Amino acid sequence: MAARTRILLVDDERYVRDSLVELLSIEGYACAAAGSMPEALELLGSFAPAVVLTDLSMPSGDGLELLAAIRRAGSHVPVVLMTGVGTVRDAVAAIQGGAYDFLQKPVDASQLRLVLRRAVEHQELVREVRNLREVARPGGGRELVGGSAAMARVRQLIEQVAATDATVLVTGESGTGKELVAEHLHLRSARARKPLVRVNCAAIPTTLFESEFFGHRRGAFSGAVADRTGRFAEAEGGTIVLDEIGTLPGEMQAKLLRVLENGEYQVVGESRTRVSDARVIALTNEALAERVQKGEFRADLYYRLAVFPIAMPPLRAHREDIPEIAVALLGTTLARIGGFGPGAVEVLASHDWPGNVRELRNLLERAAIVGGNGPLDAGLLRALIEPALAGTAPVSALSGGDDFHLRHNLDALEKQLLQRALEKCEGRKKDAAALLGIDARNMGYYLRKHGLSESPPRG
Image (tube, rainbow, N blue to C red):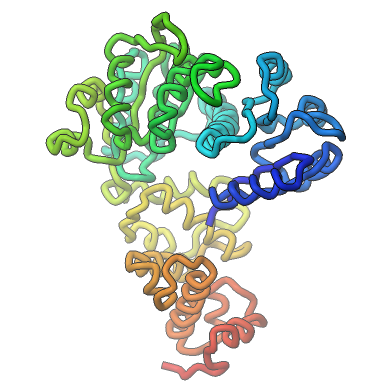
């Protein structure tokens, strides 16, 4: 399970801290709260947040001082400032000081969600840019791996269209690498030195669509305490990637179509029309052509997006690439653990991988952790894959009706793995422990924990 995104919240008012921590926890964030600037700086190193959300006015040092101290400490974490008495001067000072964004109290929950999501995406893109620069160099990583005819066709299409400004629609199942195709298209274009901006269309509320895409002026609507640059303006001269384009409601589709047709858009609260110079790449795991037939997606928008379609093949359609992809995904870890054991690659190649490369990557990471320092064993890989296959049943089937209770479902899966390992090893606990990747001395603990016999019958 992926770690939750960490938010460091700084506010001298306990009630505000508690309320925001509760809201952010419901949203799935891991929160640490500080009531002063010194406390926040102490937590910065140990907690390692993805975003800092801080009050502007505090007795122990205001938000701008905290921002400056964070930058002096060498951290580039995005800082979002909040104030109950927002002014243009505050907003300008915050942005000039290096703040990512500025919110007015009482904080609107929808706006907070969107700003934090954007800040996290910003950090991810900063990291990706570093990786992309490595890709651009000879011998760089993050390449589209695989020598199959299917992957050769994808690379050929990228080379054909990358140098143009044509809109590209990249389709394919989740986990096939659509984002990587978008990155390669950007890097191989004349826009490579300009911004690559990614927008998750599924995460944008309808009420904030125009503000998010096109920007707004201060005072354009309630809560607009400062000017905001839209995503199309951020991508000026570069590339904007519209992820999960199929999730856009009809009203948003119409507004997006205008930009795609002639590049024109208006900043909310501004009368003049602007013209965008951003290349558009859209990604979707949905069958948009079928949705057009059903009237669920605008035909004119679909044809405008699909000027040059690229379809990413599912992993099961080019199984011959799995060994090469697995080696690339594990990278230096593979040398450390001693490679693949006998039959391990065959186990990987025999699975259908409904989650595609993403599922393969997650399983390999899990296997490398569970397997310790030895080569990846075929039995271990099979034991990790089989519960995933069983997992296509409802989650409640694992825990006996506990629905999505995380701890109970993990316990149920752990017990299932123990039983499978013991059956496979005919009750030999030492062998079962080796298969599970745990110390044999701890086997008794797991058996007692799940009410299994200390001496399970053989056969």
